[in-house]
Length: 449
Image (cartoon, rainbow, N blue to C red):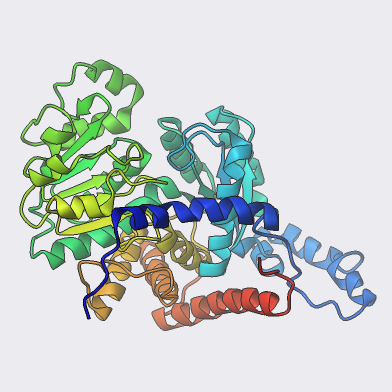
């Protein structure tokens, strides 16, 4: 029996269905998360324990020893998902309220995939100094911050400042999370096509926070800086750019890319950057049509295309395949090879919180990426299976254990455990979160549409 190959119309309909479903189901549920008790309530007498007068005892204990807050409260499992709505998905500056559905979705993924209690916080300010101040004054309540959807260049200063001045881990998922999962996919893609990470030529399309962080992490992971060519809206990045003075003054991260990459001084735009490249990693303007099939035709043999703009990739996967790409990945869950942050941040934060780490280093991100790639390799990588899918729940405890061990090795952890202990702790917390959601659905507390 011959296999049915979907038509372009069928593929387009499939790609558009999540948006249509979202417009029905978001009003149905009016939000994706809520607060439920964690402690038992056997009778009204228990409130004398959980609230006044009994609660005064743990309060006094924390006052004597502030580290006891991790023992008496849920601080060690609370993460704030903080955004100002200035760079939401591929939609741009749509405002704090319009960004709230994304932050709620992030909190849901944190809980279901990582067993992490996350709180969405959308700030009604675009002032980076006020953003930083708000986060700093919130640190007593949270075990970590997940910064989300903040425009550049302020996102770099916000992250760097908070990482330096907070005693809890601060993470910008659009930078570190995207970089970790992209590195995992890149490791296996290059391995599958029989090339070497240190020699492949890579075009990075887009010079936003995500691709700048990706360049930093993949270089630390083994890519040769001179073999990278990054492109922004004005062309390829190199030291001879006409706007070099502006870059040096206002975009120090982008100027650093100019200095260390593009060893052949390629000038031009996206077509010139992609010509002869082994890999293209695009996180730029949503497509289709941002990357053209004829540009892929001029890439090296066995080319790898990561078209990761959301909600629509820079080129449809089937178009990239027809143009000659050997492997194609996107940021969408409805296509094969989803390179999506949801494969990274739940496990990375789980491991970070379990050892009560003071920060999340690039080395911890690389440890997560390596483990994520290894999970797929253990099952057998294919052209349509570079990294695991979100269905493979064991990914997250394995990532957590790898991250926790790296934090301990680097001396940024408050708690020391063995890898086996970390794996067991993470597995138990993640299983509990998933089973809790299932039980609430089965009992009807979460209604089915």
